[in-house]
Length: 402
Image (cartoon, rainbow, N blue to C red; front, side, top):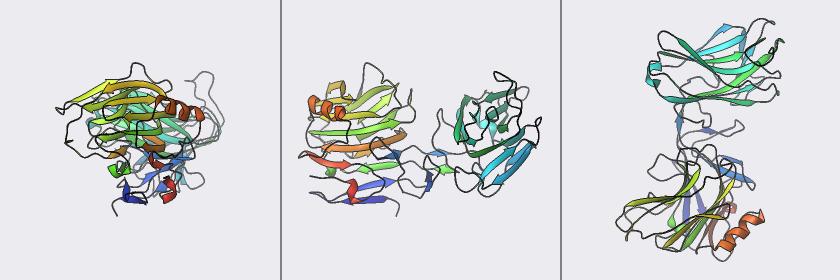
């Protein structure tokens, strides 16, 4: 099937659909199949990942079959199953003695297509000594080289993610990904480390984005979780949507915890909550909260209440937006609840959603404050029309109904 569905017993039968037309990887390196949701550690138990798609330009980033595309100008190297983060293999770079670095290089295809473009490159590395493991990007513009370096691996003996975000020069003619096991490096504070060791690398990802998404070999399709209006929403109200959300990146990017129509949604931009609606003439309008969210990539409690006229947005039980709406009647578009994105839109949550509840009335300030202060999953009561806790699988036990 092209869609993974959840059949739930309600007053009306509904189908909750999750779609991702490719495999994907969880944060611990496990692969999940086509249209299989990714469940990660959530606010309460497990949460569901909803992420945009991406294409990895590094065509052999997990070293699963061979070392094709990589060259090794110095040091010792091997494809090994001793350590791995994704799949069954990683790349091991070893200093042969106290004077020789170990390196692996990958030349990015069609480098001029990235002229003036911003990309993010990530790799997972593991080593037990500091000042050895590093990710570097070397670019050449036909006359001069420019080298951009990540932070060092700390030497913790654990897998750590190294990340670089950079914008290439407009005249770039060559781009090279470099994995480095340095020896005796003097570019850092102090004398570096002169003890030969090995560094393992896995999951190299080169993507044309100003932020990192999760690893994939090849292309990862977009993820979409859709709940029909039979789950308790209608286009005249009243209702409440609540969930906990944790986005992986924010800034000036549009981040969407949920939407019910292409012009009626809650968003996050410039680290501020945003509400979108349309007036009776179908003209889209937006209202931004006055203040940004502190620690924006932490877990936050998002609420939208709508009584059919007044929409109110809360973050962590604080009312940040209140606006009168006058929607077109009839509504010129489908009315469905999309979790982690806006339908027909390239903006996504890029993170985790947990503890979703839909109610058949507009919850009060006092109820929202009490739910947040409790530190517990949202309860099911007489007004709850749908509850998803996302605890690790799509079965009817994800659904709680009174």
